[in-house]
Image (tube, rainbow, N blue to C red; front, side):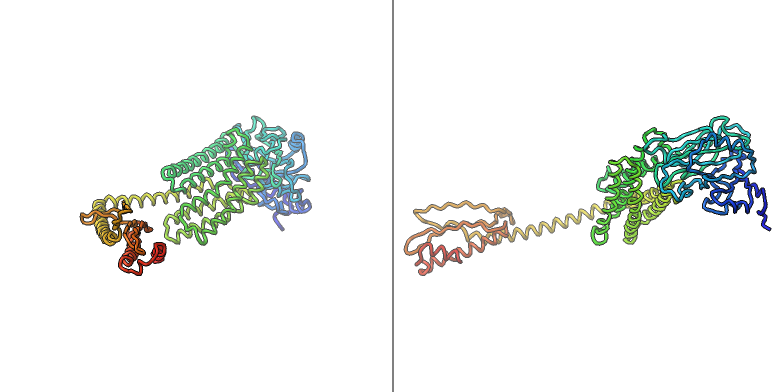
Length: 596
C-alpha cells in the first residue's frame, strides 16, 4: 500500500529557516482538481535566515499533492475586501500543519512569473488581480522585518493581516508607474504575527496587456536592515561598474580628440556612453533620482536604439575592410537595421506611449540583433583570416558580449528569471580592447626602440639616398639642358630679320618661355618664331614675314617652331631661286605657302 494513502501528515521539510508543512491525501486531491487544491502553509522559523517566499511547485501540474510540490501562491481576478478576508482566515483555527486550501475563484500561480500562466483564457492583463499567501511565523525576535516582492508590473498595494503596509504607484494613473521596480516594503511594528498565522495579500494592476504581477527577481522575508543593505549595496555596485565603463568611454573619446582620423575611437566612446545610460536606467537606483518614469524610459529607449548601430560602426571602422565585393553589399544591407534603430529613436522622441515603444522594440528592433551578430562575426572572422591578431582578442570579447545580450534579451522577454548580466560581462569586451591597445603600444614601442637603436645609421642611409637622388637629378638636368641648347641652335637660324626694304621697316622682339644655362652659356627655348625676308613676285619687291607660336612649352614648342621655320625657310629659298615661283601673284603665293 502506498505510504501516501490515507495519510494525514505527509511531512515537514525545513530549508534555510523555512519549514514546509504539507497535509492532505491522494484520494481527496483527486476529488478536488484545480483550481481547488491543497497547499502547505510555509512556516518561517527564522527571519534572520532570509527565507525565500518563491513558489516551490510547478503551477501547471495536476497532481498537486505530490511531495516535491510543496507550497506556493494563489491569485484571483475577483475583487475582495482585504480586511474582511484576512480576518476570516485569521479567525479560523489554522495550525502549522493545516493545509492551505483555496476554492474558486482562487487559482495557483507561479511566483515569480507572469499572471498569464494562471489565466490562459485572458488576453488583457491591465485589470486588477489579488495575490494571496499564508505564512506561519515562529520567530520571537523583535527585529524589524521587510518583505521583498521582486519586480511587480505595474502598480501594487500590499496588505499584511488586513492592514495596508505599502503601495507603489498612483493606482488610477493613465501612464506607467513602476513596471520594472523591485518592491521592498518595511513592515510597521506589530503588524507581523511573530507566533502564528499571517495573511499576505497583494493587489496588483498591469500596464502592458500581455503581462502583470510579480514578474521577476525573487520574493523573501528578511530583517529590514539586511534587506535594505543588500538593496542599496547592489545598486552601488552597479553604479561603480558603470563609472568604470564611463571612464573607458571617456578615454576613447580622448584618443579621438588627439587623433581624429581614427574615427573608431569616437564610435566606441559613444557606444560606451549609450551602454552606461541604458544600464543605469535598468538599475533600481534610477528611482532614487525622483524623475518622471516616462522621461527615464524615453532616455533608456533612446540609448538602446543607438547601442547596436554604434557597436557595428565601431567594428566596421576598426578593421579597414575593402569597400568592394561582399563588403560593399554588406554595407548597403546594414542600412536597413540602422534605419529600424533610427525609426525607434524617432518614435520614442515624438510619441509618449510606452506600449508603442515596447511593441516596436520587440517586433522590429530586437530581431535585428541577429543581423548585427552575423555581420560582426563575419567582419572579425575575415580579419582573423587576413592575419590581424587584434581580431582574435576582439572575437573573444565580442562573443562574451553577444552571449550577455542574448541572456538579457531572454530576461527582458520573460524567458529567464535571472539578473541582467550585460553590465558585468561588458568588462570582458573592455579587457579585449585593452589587450588590443596594449599590443598597439608594444608595437609602437618596438618601432621607437628600433629607431633609437639605428637612428644614426638610418640617417646616414637616408642622406646617401638623397645624395644619389640629387646626383641623378643633376645628371638628368644637364642632359636636358644639352637637348635644349642643341634645339635652340637649330631654331635660331630659321628666324630673324632679313628685310632690307627702303619702304617697310621691320622690328622684332622675341622672348622665349624657357631660359636655361648650359656649360656657362645662357640661352632660351620655346615655340615663338619671327622671320622677315624680301622677295620678288612679277618683278615687284615684297616683304614676306612670319610670326608663329607653336603649341607647347620649352622643348615641345621648340619642336613645332623648328618644323614651321624649316618649311617657311624652304619656301622663301625656292622663291628667291626659282623664276617659276616668282611668276605668281602675292595671293597665289600665300595660298601655296599655307598649303605647304
